[in-house]
Amino acid sequence: MSNALWNPTTVGEISLPHRLAMAPMTRNRSTPGGVPTELNAEYYVQRASHALIITEGTQPNADGQGYLLTPGIYSEEHIAGWRKVTDAVHKADGRIIIQLMHAGRMSHPDNTPHHRQPVAPSPVQPAGEMFTATGLQEMPVPRELSTGEVATTVDDFRRAAAAAIAAGADGVEIHGANGYLVHQFLADNTNQRTDRYGGSIDNRIRFAVEIATAVADEIGASRTGLRISPGNPFNDIAENDTHDLYPALVRALAPLDLAYLHIGNHGGDDELLHTLRKLWPTTLLLNRAGTDIATRGKDIEDGIADVITVGTMALANPDLVERVRTGAPLNTPDFATVYGGGEAGYTDYPTHTA
Image (cartoon, rainbow, N blue to C red; front, side, top):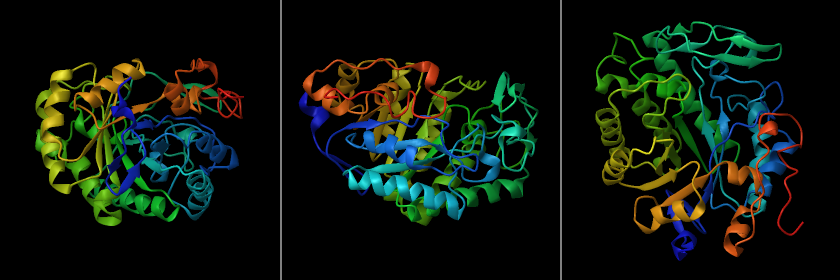
């Protein structure tokens, strides 16, 4: 394997010892109030040898919660819980970024602290069902955010970013991918608005750009990243203009000089990937799900990516970095326990030396 993977680099103001980072993955193991626990701290500490940890999606407000037992970062209790995690990761010489994720319409009232109707760009009901404490339930038609509420949500992201830094995070990643709220504003099937946030491409990218601007103004651009997944149909998303939409988004974001852009689940559209690489002025993180490390590492050699991120491999191999360096075999992920509770499939994966 090329040595390029092991070359140090920087992401904004964060120095990385190599280029193999951990992607964000929902794990559903916080308290019902969204507070991380000692178990969460142990999980992330086990994976601290990754160049950078990007945490699971973390709701910036009560409306942002989509799933059970996901963490928040908008209260003092959340800050204290995350502080346990970040202190432990830093003690283990790791670096950790909290991902800010608003689920938008991908939710159910039973999964939120206030039990209100989910919110979205437009009242378009998502296909599928949501797992709740009483089992699978149909997701309801979401309530359309008013223009004023959109501005309030932008401010909620700003305050959540400040809370993440107060909790000791090295930065934040704005989740603009995988069919959640920011992505819902980008996609033309979920955004049917007629105000300044809907219709044209310039209007549909406005929410993402405003959030990135607000967060960067609050905590510094060098500690702010954004994740996108162009053309990803996950969570009932249909995008028909990705080759116009995403270059427009990247051009609008480029002057902010953010720490990084994180591209994942781009559907194998390497033509678009290469276009975005040319347009993006700072660090680019890339997640090619389903491929091996050698394939991903070639993207670094070829200058397509600066850092690669891995999901399920990092989940099942807390010492993935050491395994890759030495050529050791990898553990197989137990997908039945991904969203379970407790240690099973979370902190009980063996290390190579165990």
